Length: 154
Image (cartoon, rainbow, N blue to C red; front, side):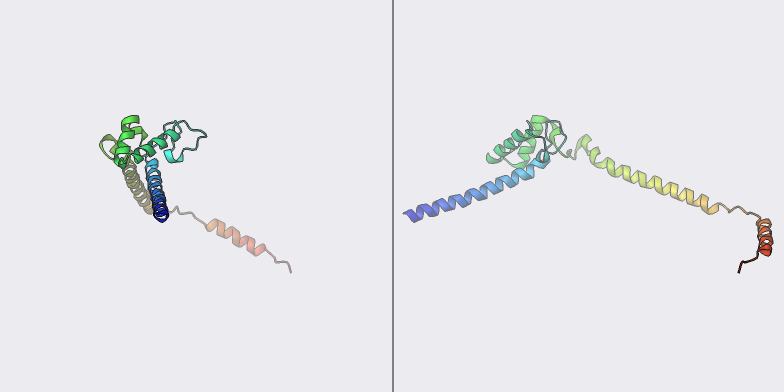
């Protein structure tokens, strides 16, 4: 009887460790999807304010929702309904928010095209430019005269 009881207790203990680890992993994976609402503009998982009035309760609420068996999508929708889409760390890729995903790449593409255009334009100007011709004969004559008068010291 004692053996069955201890085996059952041991099994319950191992099961609770697995449940806790799974719970903590889910919370750790969900927290970076949200911004802390205290005004620090940091991820919820990275808010470093001492005694932050928002990050602790928000993480506890995520833990409560996870304990209730809610899915990750439900938790995200719950926070969006509660705080608005500004609580999300990355804007959703739909509607007007799609511009936040597209514009950096579009700006990079336009910048590359402008750089290529100006590089080709200036290269054509530089290739067509002739070097100025300078008559060096007076200078050469002056050097030759000075070399004739030069006497090396022994």
